Amino acid sequence: MPMETSENGPISTPLAQRISADCASQAALTVFSAATPETPLGLACESFKSTYGVILGGAIKESRVMKTCHEKTSPVIINP
Image (cartoon, rainbow, N blue to C red; front, side, top):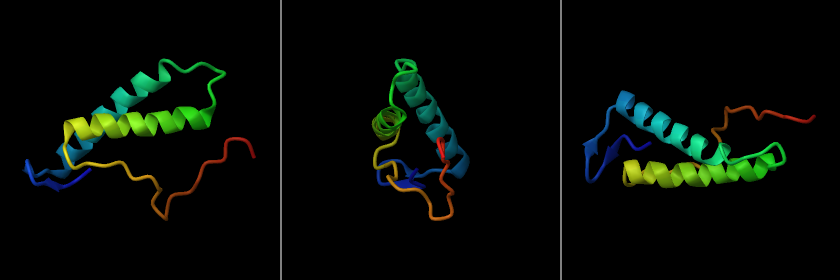
């Protein structure tokens, strides 16, 4: 989430967190409510990321969803 935009100026961290969380919740509801047990996990995750990017971009212009994880993030292995 950008901490400052050219249109809106500075955005506080709590506001950025709240907007991000609301957008993630909406994206999850949109994508995962249509998913079934047969839906491939990778497809659902990719759909969530793109839907989240669209919703977040509508809420705050200039925002973007990073496509890579932070280097300190540990991957979760579902089926070892």
